[in-house]
Image 1 (cartoon, one colour):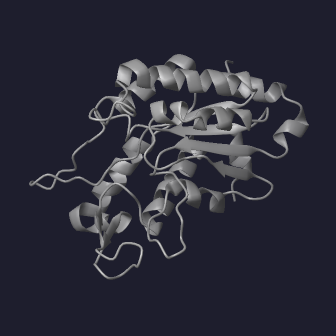
Image 2 (image 1 turned 135 degrees about the vertical axis):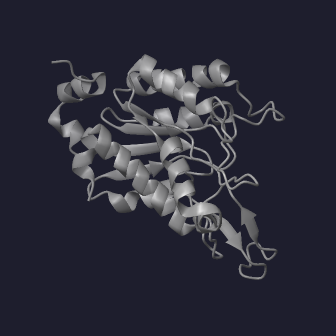
Length: 244
């Protein structure tokens, strides 16, 4: 019977290393922690993640607004994450939204070029530290056409990530597919609750209000975090034992 590479390596670790898992998140604004003083209705799914885990698990969220795989590396954020890794840690990696920005050379990466190469680098760096990488396809945006059909905005990026995951035998959280279904299930109007559709004058932070179909409300972020947990359970990752 063949076992996944991540499971074989994990079983070879000393029990002490698996006793207190640390799960790191690398990604963009859709996953990032947000400031909430003054009050802010925007949340990343990563800041809702700890609520699903029991002690002594630790969630370390490195996700940062506006970053692509390229800018996350170029700004030294990836190097700092790797320096913080312990053997036995896990790293969930979700990028794509900003890699798509062809107008910005500081962030743009071609899906089957630099984007895929950066994902392979992330995987190799994590494994070199005795830690375990997990890829997560980029979450869907709320974009509907005139006929009421949800429009995909990520092009080849999810497919490129799936190919890297298969090639490198890394667990893949299918957040793109699941959040697409989440948006569609809520419908054209209902899906606004997942995001930031807020009247002017409601928040000091943004008095003109919000019309944002990329970033999440508290409700939306919690639903996406729950989908990530659902994927951990589906894949039967060892992290399952640390879920509430």
